[in-house]
Length: 215
Image (cartoon, rainbow, N blue to C red; front, side, top):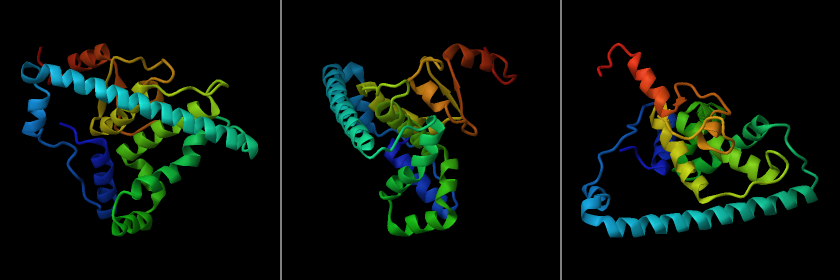
């Protein structure tokens, strides 16, 4: 399985600081396999899914309220509105990186700063994290089309998916790349090296064109 998003971000901070790669995958713990086994644990798993959805819903409400409060405060200070998403992303990315580094030891933070925080945006997990985070602020604070957008519980889950997608070179999803506020659309706002988003039909066609693919 792909490592949890927080672990991926921490590992990539260490990787950047120490100049050595870290494994993106980890063996699925037997206990987790048992939890996810529908044949053994269907009722409890459905209950867990409901609890996670409720937790995500609460988080989405808190994010929405925080962004609306920031919008009111910004208007009071005449902060203004950015020209586009790129301005939000480039302006806030340094603060986001500092936030990630606050989760690692001081020695790692120092090494990262020595190598240059701006170059950390070339690290895929950190780049995708910052793109998605900046989009939430762009849409929920400033409003992409005038009015700020309320966060939904799915946005919280997509935050995790955005980071975990960094483990892949091709991210396959059934969500539309053209539909605003959906994960594929958001992650496509800024190009990311060695990262392509495909729908399922696109991916199947890609495999068919691969000479090593066997039907």
